[in-house]
Length: 296
Image 1 (tube, rainbow, N blue to C red):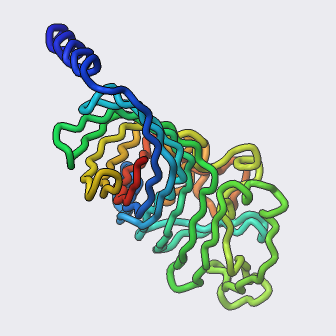
Image 2 (image 1 turned 180 degrees about the vertical axis):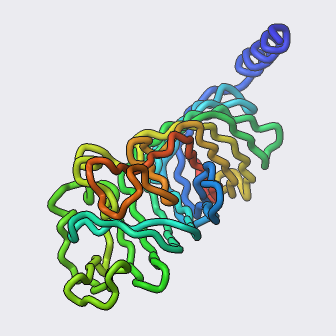
């Protein structure tokens, strides 16, 4: 392995001595196809599928010779992922003395996480029209949102409108954008015991305030590998295909709750004896980028 690395370095230096070294700048943008990779809960239908997003940014490269370059970039990168859950779950009615009930529940959620990414790549151009790149990236989450719907058995449906950053403020928890009146499963014939839920649910509507007020569901940093291929239409314009494979857990273990069950004493009163079960697992980003770029 050391001999191979030594030969590789000698080749680079040899090429560098015979070819002009220069800087290049460029822009690129395009569409994303991304999803979150992670384990599913047992006994339910849960998972992520690919969603759409977009990216755009500027890049700077330093050419060692006609074949090798190193470069970095700063770009806006929107990663979409479609989440679904179908199976046994629960709903906590915090406004009704903190009671909860179980039923067959279905979630459908479209996530959109926007990052500022800074990749660092090595570029290899064995042919005039073809260029390979390999490296890593560091991402900073700036705008995590999601939207969708939740069905709680045959009792009620909710619209889901999440902003995982701004919804962390406790005053947002008391959102008053309309309520649904729901029959209490334990006393369905007594209208004085009816429950209520929000028509539009925010990101942390199923969390006690003390659990989320100082936390966010998604971690700020992302870190991963970057590999790609560029095909040059002419000397400056190119089509690019790029794969980003995340290595860092993007969800906060303190808020990554199980939808399947609640821990506690088993009754329907959510008291100090009850608690949300948090999943100590790893969720990572997978993102394909299809780009159109121009390099000066």
